[in-house]
Amino acid sequence: MNSIANYLTIDVEDYFQVSAFEDIIRPASWDGMEHRVVHNTEKVLAILAEFDTKATFFIVGWVAEKFPHMVRAIHAQGHTIGCHSYWHRKIYNLSPEEFRADTARVKSILENSIGEPVLGYRAPSYSITEKSLWALDILKELGFTYDSSIFPIYHDTYGIPGAPRFAYHHPNGLLEYPISTVRMLGGNLPIAGGGYFRLFPYGVSRFFLRSLNRGEKQPFVFYLHPWEVDPDQPRMRQAKWLSRFRHYNNLETTAARLRRLLSDFSFTPLPVPVA
Image (cartoon, rainbow, N blue to C red; front, side, top):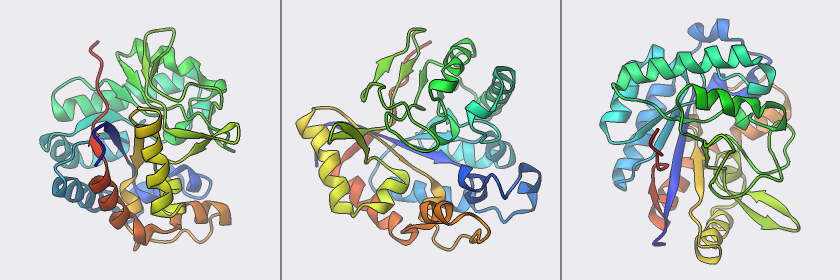
């Protein structure tokens, strides 16, 4: 196992709340869906407990409000709590006023659940891009001390390719933990979680992640969703084929791959800067 402590993050949303399905499932229908987030989060918590590993859990406010016992259980087990918006809407589709209201709402819900300040934020679908950098000042104004929303890659729905690859401070003082990439062929390759973790063979992921620790001497930021350990979740067959592929590819392998990852690397939650 590498000696560097990497950063493990879990984005807590239910399978029907993902951006890939936002054009076919509206928030008005969420109450009527089969809810699987508590069971899947408990599965992730059990795997982390096997390896005595703590993580940062960025939680959607709608989920936290509906299942406050889950939020308290995550916190009671020693994990860090962060915000992942209330409605899981992309920031660049919101006005600053809408974003402020959404973020203040989820922050209040989470803080009331755990009885302490919540200082970290992650945008739905990494949607702090060049179009929505104004959100960083609102996060600062609301009392956040760190963000983990910027993905330094080219992608069809997110990314700031020229952003720094490792932790840095924004001009307003907010600390940024970008999602980890490796340099390849003049660009940045995403290798640190989510659909990329399910797409690449595990050995490929491990090779590139080790290169960050051993070659660049840097910790990596890894992310996962509880719905990714749930191969039995309902299928959204009306979704576009690319969205279905990204969401369902290799779900049956995620839990086993996560165990291998926790065996091969050391992890901690994201360090929380004081206000």
